[in-house]
Image (tube, rainbow, N blue to C red; front, side, top):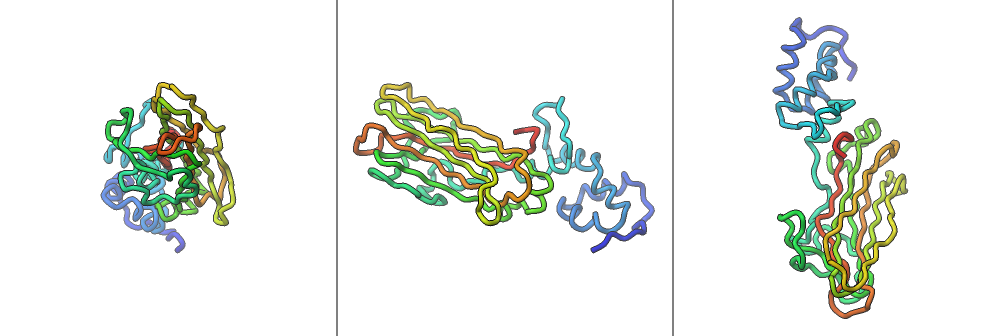
Length: 254
């Protein structure tokens, strides 16, 4: 549909802005913006999206940093959520693909040590053989269209929490990849394996990474993590993982 070169109605832009602020945001972008040059100017204006953010409570964490694109900031804030399903094991292993299930297999248990987030009460526990589980996130199905990803390339932030038992050595591993439509790797985060000795302080540790400047073509996020104990003890003495997270977020908040 080509924009109409005529003006729709001779109203001041601030009046149109107020009308658009009461319409669904996707209707403003996909419908109103195409009607005429005047409506396009309103739908593309910084003031419109800045005011929309203000009214819906999307505030800057650091007031001294201003978004380069308020529309991108708005949609990233509006859609921001954890794209991983069942990140804490509240629903057993539902949502995860078990890739390695060594030793006595994966298990879900209550925490041995309190987590920094009081809402976290359970974790996944590995055994004496390698245990790995994964999820592959289809960004389009989560509301991030190919055109949105290619044009804006928003930051993709990952986080994972892991903890050893105090009385047994263990290891932790994680791999996160950005994939194109053919499931080929565009960019990846593959840190070295983390090892814990026996008689450690069994505290929670957080692994984080932000993907940025990854170029066009990203369609999937592949997340896999796990580990095992290093002393080959029967049972569940390996690394513990929980509260994993993958978010598409404004660059200013990453």
